[in-house]
Every structure is written in structure tokens, then in C-alpha cells.
Image 1 (cartoon, helix red, strand yellow):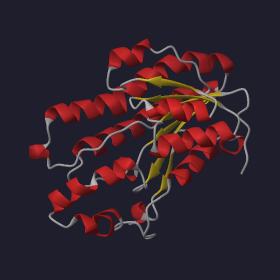
Image 2 (spheres, rainbow, N blue to C red):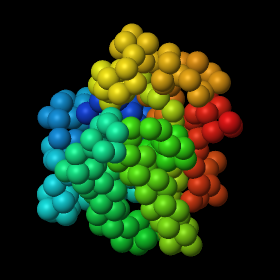
Image 3 (spheres, rainbow, N blue to C red):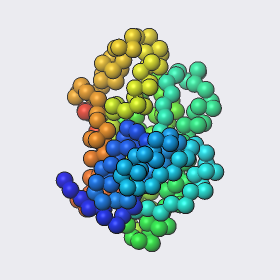
Length: 248
């Protein structure tokens, strides 16, 4: 399905790799001018290749986030990190960091973008949530909490923005083939006491009926759909890409 974002600007967070980079490429292909945010300086190369702009910024630094002067028609809330540990061993500072990065920071960015969206009568806010925004898994207290919070934030934004031409939705994939997933294999092996070679099959692919990882391009296509005219009445809801996980 083709859609046209010529004349529109799209901001994507966590755009240096994985889902964020795929979303940026997909939106740029649709004609949007992309503005990419990431703490990894590699985001500058990606932005240059897509003819867009980049801000190298630590999105867990709320002062730095608040200082950004951004204006956009599309916002993709993607940046996130993972930490795997039982609650009694989970570092409070890591829990706090993940809440700041994955909940407070997008709130601040969206708060700054909404006036422009409202003035133009158009906006598309898409949050990269997770199946963990709908279901829980052991050893992921901060991640599951953050994704559930994002689901709630998106619904409120949908209610407030809908009458003014701004929609907000989430995309909820199961495990995606990204560096974020690859980096947690060792931790998953440790907490589940299994070999690293068995983590994907025994942990990540247990619940989905379709036994494979999702590709970043598939998530990006879902984001693109939510920005298209065909999805203009989809608002305050979740597009689940979980291979049947939540059907259980």
C-alpha cells in the first residue's frame, strides 16, 4: 500500500538502528522529511542517507529533551532499552531510567509537538509498544510497566487529539530481530538457567503461534499504515503484531 507524506515532517526516536531506522526509511520513502533522534551518533549517517536531520541526544536527559525545538506532523515514539532481572535484584536506578526514557521523555516530546499539530489540524502519533504492553513476562518489571504506561498515554492522546485531527495509536510486536533483542539473550539465559543457544526457541518463540522473529520492516509497514489516509479513523487503539501470542 502506498501513501504520500510529501510536505510532512516525521520525528522518530531511537532511530540509529532496528525498528527506529526502519521506520525512518519507510516514512522517508513516503515523502516525509525525517528528523531522527538517538544517543548513538550513527543516527547522523542514517539521517544523511535519508535526506533528513538528526539530533544526537540522550533521551533519558529530560532537560536535553525539553530543550529540543521540534515541529512535526508525525511522531514515532520508539526509543527504549531492556534490562532482565527478578524484581528483588532489579536495580532501582535502572527502573527509574527506563521510566524516564520510555514514558516521561516521549510525554515531553509529544507535549511540545501537539500545539503545531493542533494548529495544522493534522497529526499522527505512533508508539512502538510491545506485546508486553498487553501481556507480562517474568524478569521484565520495568519494561512491562513502561509499555503498559505507553498504552495508557496513547489512549489519552487519542481522546484529546482525535477531535483536532491528531490520532494516537500503538504498534505491539512480539520479539523483533533487533540489537535490543540480541543484547538480552545472555540475560535471558542467565535468569532462566538455560544455554544462550536455546533462548530464542525456548523463551522468545514459546507464545507466538508463528515461530519466527518479526523483521523491523514489518513493524515499519504497520507504522506507515497508521499514518496513511486509510487509517484515519483508527485512534486510541493497538495494532498487535504478535503471531498469535495474545490469542491465548
